[in-house]
Length: 557
Image 1 (cartoon, one colour):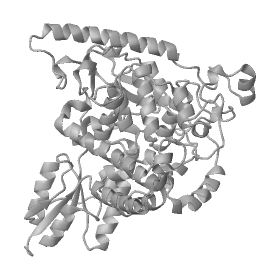
Image 2: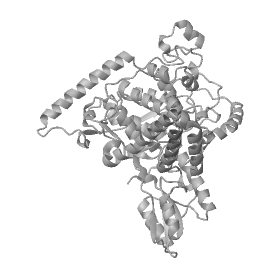
Image 3: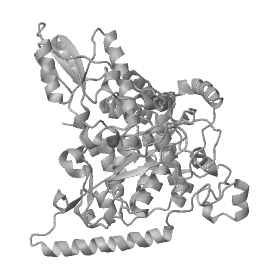
Image 4: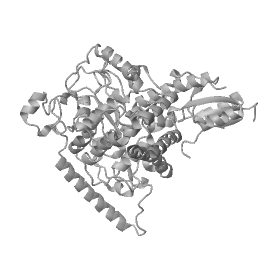
């Protein structure tokens, strides 16, 4: 062991003490200098959204405190170049080694606040996140233990229910490396062996399904490592011939949760309010985006990146490619699932829809997933006025099916022509960059408005056409030990002022984080397929201006 040398432990997406091979190896070799480098310029178009940056900040604070308790100070560096910062750090401290974990395969020390992960306008909304989430590696450990001991056994029965605590909620912990996949696998596998010995078939099925979900996450790493172009182009080449519709109005309605399909709208409003959605809801809203609205899947994936608390590039790529039919084992592109049918399947009593669409709170369960079919007397009793306080469907299901069928025919005709022109055949998998136009994904920015002075517990909620007094609901996020404290918080928040009146044209829930970055940051943008139908003024203007949310006066990314 070299007792004289100092080893730099470079933390990235492994913000934990437990089960950290790099940290363990460095500690065995002598003196340890933990370092975290934040380089916004290198994030490019994948600069993290507001809620993701909030999690990162809280996780770093937790890690910093944990390391200090062990006698090691976490060095935080904000830099323009990660490599240059590492070299300067080596020179400054005389380090002889750098230890770091693979993600797949004089130096100025700054404070957490100096990293710029959270600005003043974001703090009020971010405070709400702390009611339901507890970042940090030790909290990840508690969440793992609680899930394995209390919830895992029912996973096979409850995982498809979109209301309530039905999934592990591990995703943000896994993304930031506060929890290792190896540790999750070990704990769950040990439980499986115990249940096998006891003959607990339900428990064994739950473990198998859960490990399958974890396996998909690792599969996403495999896909992105071997096919690095998949963040902007389909894995299978057929989608480069698909006639996407770059409809800005449809994109905005989807973001706002105003498509007229309750389950889709509830999911999008939950995303805005909490930064999280059940996996089943992610599949439903992304399928609607691609197959009902025919919008380019890259747009939806980038919006997820900007708004999800657990935004994870590899997982998001796999999900959107899967739903778009561009994976060999993914959804058939022809498959069009009705949100109405999905609603009765995964939210049979309408509990989830009522939670996030207060304007439909009084709709009977029989009609809540298709209010457009409800008799006028039912709508009147529920206080629902279609087209006024809740939108009519943005596109009829039958029309959506016809448009999808027509688009598929166009895609196959174009593909056949292209294949006939190639003497050596057409590759199924490959980089299709030569067939991609330079049309950028629309950046969503706020119109300038005087900031609203009103602040309330509703700040982070998507406003409906009517004000409502229900408190911010984050119960799906809470660990069991936090339920009692949450109830006390809700009593306090419900006594605060009501939300201010909102405009008829609701603000967009998509404020692209890349549009809010400092001018020095990279502004690289997505491209969408060449066959995308776009108006001429869209080509000239890649920024979409939207109204600011008058109930909070905050930017959200």
